[in-house]
Length: 164
Image (tube, rainbow, N blue to C red; front, side, top):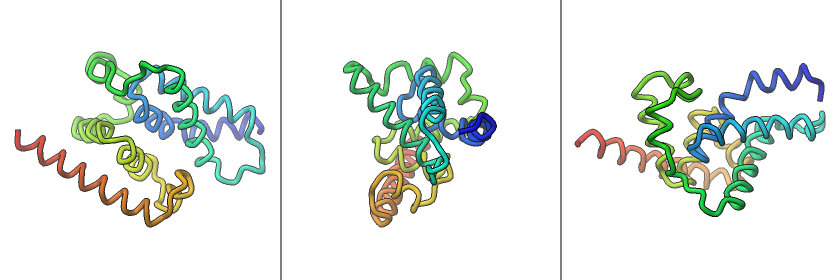
């Protein structure tokens, strides 16, 4: 792949990929590493025969995270999340400036992994249900059902937080 093409890919997808990586690991530095490693793999392995580059990037990112989680038995999604979001300004703060949007994003990443993944891909990464089904390996009907349930759970969480 030519450097110019890779640069265009990076400019186009790095924010979405970072958000996705952050939603998986909830660690700013690990999300940066996963994003960088994903683009490094793109330099090495992507050629003109790859048709769905965006899906390939997201799948590689998820696989890198799963590899990391397998190696680090003590890895926990909750470790240090509050410190990261409140103390230091991260690229996430620059991407999601509005407090309400940040609060909503925090609720999304606190959901169970399947709900979190489909909401992130659908709303933050602009994947269609068909693209999500192709990326995750589920049927389009299963993706619709999962998205419906994830929205319902998120609505319950939002209503519960507003009553307090």
